[in-house]
Image 1 (cartoon, rainbow, N blue to C red):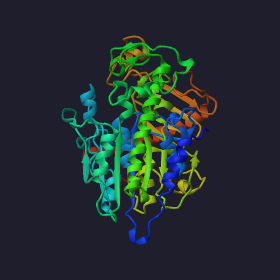
Image 2: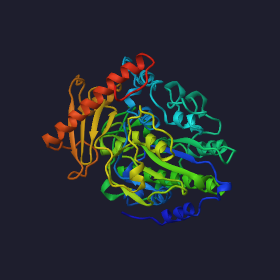
Image 3: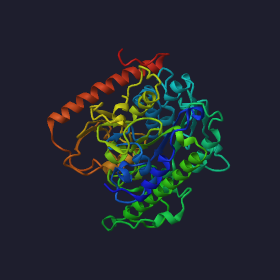
Image 4: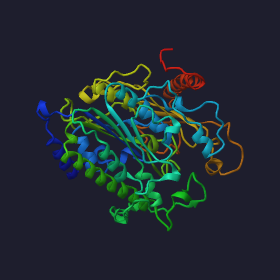
Length: 478
């Protein structure tokens, strides 16, 4: 694993934030920065060979990195719902909404009132709460605003005059920070910059060529006239010209480096004003981005490693005790983040949260807390069960609201909606990340994870029907 010089620079800044005297102690802050399109394997602290993330690496050096953290979904609404509720995101999918296109797909999502919220729990225990959202889909219409005193979002027809992107979101967050230094607070910053890189929005061209394309990635993917398509670049994400896969990867890495620099400016600003001194900072990927490994180019929507394996880095406030610079290999899910943050701050975890607290791992324990992580959704309407070694996936490539995606997968116009695809990935022996090669063969592992998935998602489907049908509170024991 490489260690970049930049990580030591940021670490030294964070180390300088020693605790204030008791008379001047600030309230505790919790800052979650949730980044769309962020792959775990492109983060320096998790072993990447390019210096894309020196600032994030610095946070990792002062906290804990989870090297086996998995998103609960490759879809935007579902992935954020998982983080903010600590529950399987399928609980937020209306069971009786027929999906026939993008509009009805959005209408199918609403977080029921009976599901616990991270923000609501913090608010109930005296924390000021705010969310700063960088995409119109994450809205109060879908139930995301509950528990936030301030939910700063926008609609597609009402994009702020000063634009969007991390710098704008960060400025809104800094302006919100409580004036009372004794006030505890929780803020959620949604970052969509890595998704916008393909539309060239907010991208400095300097970063396009910051990294040289890898010679082994010289193939040029075709372009297709579809919003989501396999084995070609979607036209909506094509910026013109003829680029090799290596050049696309270099653009992604350059955009990540640019975003990392913006994060540096936010942390330095918080440090100068004293806000970083007693703030726990979390970097979490909501879902990843495929660069051809899964059959998708510059897009997400599969249950493979490139979409589900995400970084989870927790840098506890310097005033907190715990391990520093620790890499945790035990399994974690993004639904674990909410109970973890509540547990770390002494706020009770509501019984409805399905995630497990990772506090003991952050403190230095090696005892595994989770045996299986689950994921669902995507362009192929699938479900996955992931353990320390295996990923079991059952999907339906012939389904989904975009028929062109199904056509590109099968190469014909036949009806494949009822044909399941079962795939087993052995991460110990197969380094491929995309789940499009031959499936591994291990009947025992496959059957075990298949049963785990059937039990988990069977309960989720029953609970979702109850939650969306009437006012009910989630109780995993019922």
